[in-house]
Image (tube, rainbow, N blue to C red; front, side, top):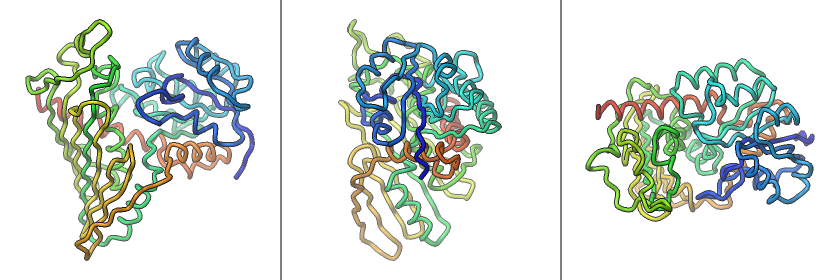
Length: 373
């Protein structure tokens, strides 16, 4: 593989790029394991936080890196080969000034790794961003890391070997909310809501495994945060002693549960049930794919994943552990390889791919909203 040194930079000094969030998904610790990278800058609207992140890091990779309060100044001064964009949904993925960082990177000829979701704007606006990126010469990769997991690779190969046309996708995602101490998380306006921002990984896997969706087929219902059925008894409190959603207008409180169904272009069926109902910190997540004689379940994909597989002509389910797998590292390595060689083939989710996921998450969100209008 081409091992020429790449100048890289980070836009966003938060947990997704540097760790410290509720999970092990940060890019800096993975990139530190890839040879031939040199960090030239970290940009964040909080320049002091960017500087603090650089001070915390160790190693030759960060030697000479500079902190910036404006990513545009960083692009102009450092001219990185590639950037990792890890900012809140309402800070990017738009054509509006101040939220159009992808367009600025493309104009500067900088390749982009963009964390999900693509934005919280309406899909037609993100579609315009995608059009500009497609017309540019920059490479894009979006952080749907499960596309790089060994479990999903196994399921895809299993589906390819399974005859018969019947296919069904079943996604179940129950979020633990007691320790979510982010005011913006409880308000759909800065994030797009839990389907756009959180369940998006499972929506993306539906597309990855079973192909495009007929968006006109999407149907959904929800338990709105404004309804009597949407009361939650363990919402964390702010330092002032108020629940984190206390200041959010009722119509913008995130739905407590959403159930959706749709049809794939192939005729296969899909469903997703997402909820915010568990206490403490541990989520409960699982997805299943059914075929002719086949049932495969991916259990606990965010924790200690394993597969339960019942193959055609069998009544037994085999448990297959997924060990020593780091899809976060794999996706970063794939993007670095693509940038070094100019060959986009290692990238499993481009911006254009992620746009399809984004459109489906909004189709579910809108269908559920209309059901309660």
